[in-house]
Amino acid sequence: MIYDIAIIGAGPAGLAAAIYGQRAGLKTITFEANVHGGQIINTPEVENYPALGKVSGVEYAMGIYEQAVGFGAEIEYKAVVDVQLEGDVKTLKCNDGSEYQAKTVIIATGVVRRKLEIPGEDRFLGAGVSYCATCDGLFFKDKTATVVGGGNTALEDAVYLAGICEKVYLIHRRDEFRGSRHEVEKVLANPKIEILYDTIPLAIEGEGMVSRLQVKNVKTEEEKTLYTSAVFVAVGLVPQNDIFAGKVDMDGGYIAAGESCVTNVPGVFVAGDTRTKSLRQLVTATADGAIAATAAANYLDR
Ligand code: NAP
Image 1 (tube, protein in one colour):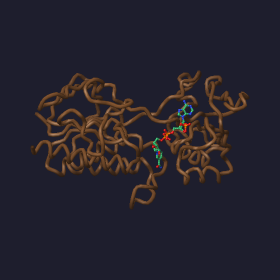
Image 2 (spheres, protein in one colour):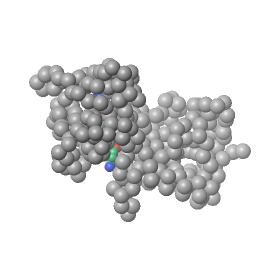
Image 3 (cartoon, rainbow, N blue to C red):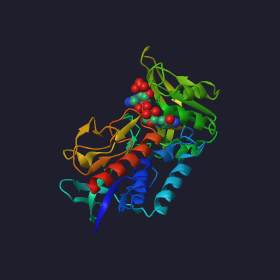
Image 4 (cartoon, helix red, strand yellow):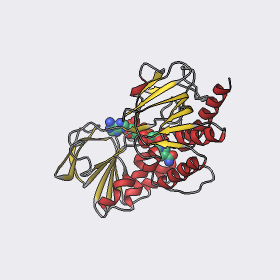
């Protein structure tokens, strides 16, 4: 069969696209390589989505998933490994060898966490190194944990871990945070969080599990050892667009598109964090999903 819309990625952008596509009477299929929900499942608390109050990222992910499925969205848990995007019928090839065809494609592949690329990071993955405080924080109850980064993710992770751990180091390479003032104030008010500004991590060390982090002050050049049971890495995001290289216009690894979510390839749209945009937020991801699905519907009408 030929679907109306194939959506790659079942995060908030992809699932919002599925909701809007299904409600427009179109037959959609959504592909997800991991678990539905995308990056938001790593967020302890969402408190800036209009009218929702406070919900956990996991609660939000379950809510949007159930809503999409409730409208008849079909979700396939497989990775799309290759795409043919030219012409009226697009083809998506999956990691199990299966192929799917659709008249339009919405790219909603999102982003993954950037790595530090320092010694010990790979060796201690799952043994004290983590990219998800909400997933792994509880393993370090009453211990010392370290968060690396200066954006909203790092700030939120530090506050979340301070509720579990005895002490939290927050190390940031500059003397000013990138994250919002509201999150910075929460960090500054938390007596369990010790901030090390102008500091970069050099190496993660331990015997079996993480026990030390070597750091350096970039202004004074002073190096020292932090005794820590965990290192939570929150140093930004990297788009997941390798399979589209040479097939869709990109800018710095992100799929090039404006607020219309229209790419340079007819019938191919993009939604969420993986698009060139100035504000990567839950609310802008779901808005993109709605816009991309509506643009796909208009394209099909024409
Ligand atoms: P981000 O805003 O890109 O921040 C990444 C941080 O990591 C920056 O402070 C950066 O330092 C630092 N960094 C980058 N590479 C590094 C390296 N190799 N070593 C040490 N530090 C490094 O990433 P994010 O915090 O994951 O947030 C991503 C997006 O999601 C943002 O738009 C953010 O606002 C949004 N977000 C929003 C919320 C919310 O609204 N509640 C929550 C989480 C995330 P510099 O500052 O020096 O560049």
